[in-house]
Length: 320
Image (cartoon, rainbow, N blue to C red; front, side, top):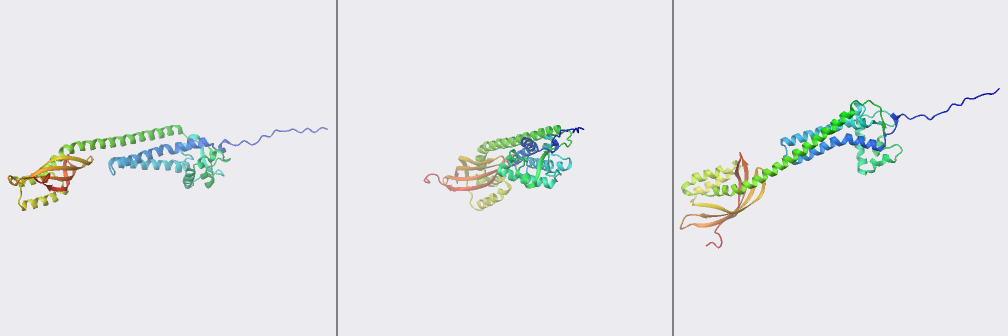
């Protein structure tokens, strides 16, 4: 009697693709999709907030968009994996982050993992460690005992969501750059206009303010006060009162030279070299003076906000 034994071929168990570890390039691509759109918007808006006038409309708008971009980044990285089982980048490439035993990581665990990625960033090597590590782990994965595996979680319309996210981020970045350029360009153009206006109007305003005649003293002082801002009108009136209580003489000035020290769309500082005459013949004498004047634009008109005498009036040359 012959005993026949039927041999059955045995095959090694197949590893489910759902449990396969994700390669480095897939992980890198997923991180790029998760971080780059929101990161680019946040960076652009931060730069815009530094170029536009602080506390203005554009500053508040850029700050709000910056906050929304950071919030969207946190929601995508921390909350969506707990609600739907994936973030945008991980869903696009079919991967997920789990504990080594395959259990899901909570939002706090994902937050600690992202914070642990700072160690990968500081060392640089940590991000490259999965290239030769048998378990394809970064330093953050080692600390938090996590793995990145292929996942079969349903991801409806993920390509459409990804394209929409990238396009939205691109539009916001371009809009931010356009706003920044427009604001800076308009400010530079307004500053150039300030320089051109002050170069012509500044000497005339100061000459009118310092010139007066005893016969028309009240009108001359009133005109001078109209050329000053509210903050400088008080000190100017005090000086005029001193002149009025004394023995007023003809006081006439004209500008011989000047230079603009600084300028902005609504402010300017100018250094003026002046000549003039004081008194009437035969007691008339010619004088020179140097003043620094601060101008402020108010209601479309330039007014003197402060006038500092650097060189007091004195006879020109040797006094002859």
